[in-house]
Image 1 (cartoon, rainbow, N blue to C red):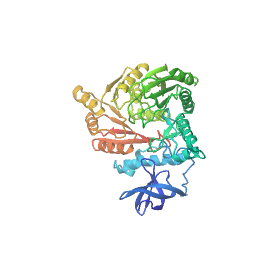
Image 2 (image 1 turned 45 degrees about the vertical axis):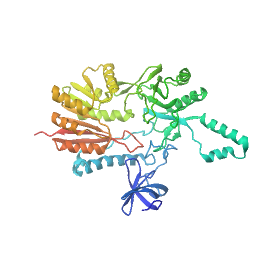
Image 3 (image 1 turned 90 degrees about the vertical axis):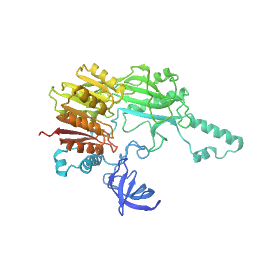
Image 4 (image 1 turned 60 degrees about the vertical axis):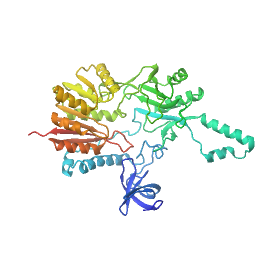
Length: 486
């Protein structure tokens, strides 16, 4: 195909970024906003030798699984890639994605997967599930045609005054929302369909504080302005709320006015700010400062309590996290006599879940703040058999095994998308735990790592996908590997 050429395409898959995938005479097209089952007209915008990226021009025949998006900004925003696909089809697609990767990359047969795969666990209510949201703050952009409309019918000095007035009006109106897909242009939206309903009330309160007190939003182009982001955390179990403003400065101006607005909201528990004057894409600063209330909120997963600060890592979907962790605990098959290593442990969420049923749990995480949180969470839960290490999982586990003779009956890993380092897998294989429980956020790297484990004495016993992020292409998977007895 040539650039700007159009074609009729049947969509039969979804890509890693949520694009519909179809073929024209063997040439693969990635088409944003198309869903599985659509027949669409698409225009090629960027072509490679064997594939290209096309723009959806119109849907000729809608998929039977196409639905109307709940959010008016679903296509513009990069947060919900597949909101226009029915939830039942989303679950089918995600389960198929996990199975396909295990088969293609992991080398597992259909017969084996039929035996070990369990149905994907979805949500009864796949909206309003996020307990954390980070909203960029800026100003509404005005393009040239808008300015012409403002200036129409005015000449000379009147035109110059009107133009200045129009620019001033726009600049005085801060907005918050989400970045449009692959841009840093903010789509004004205070009512995200994935966030909790109270987010809108909080955002409106912050915007009111900014307008009434002439607090400027941050401008990425100039590096000036104060308010960069609004972080909101919500405790599903406790109903506690945290608001943290990320600011481009040392102090939050007129903070008492912000407090005055936010404390009107039921459940407000913590108001803080985090200083970030770096001109990059990192949202949070390295530290935070209390403005009102506590430095943290508390939430629970099952009967384990967690204190969460503005800088804490904490799973964003607590409903499905409970499902995931309960399955991990089931797979660990703990009797109270086991030594368990929990690698990539974060603030100890899985570690503390396991500790009540194990002899000892050892957690490893590279982020020092997360380990401090983990130790604190162990203390507030009265858990004394959990020990935590700061460092890279592959380095800490190898050191403790080689130098201190550490052993493991069960190893739990919950790595980032890139999966486990090869050196970590080698140490795990040398330690020869009876069971390995692998929690994955990327089924492709999961499949790669399982293949290695199966080549070195382990067998895939069971696998269950969990829909941790409805309306997106992401899916979590929890797997049980058992050592083959010789």
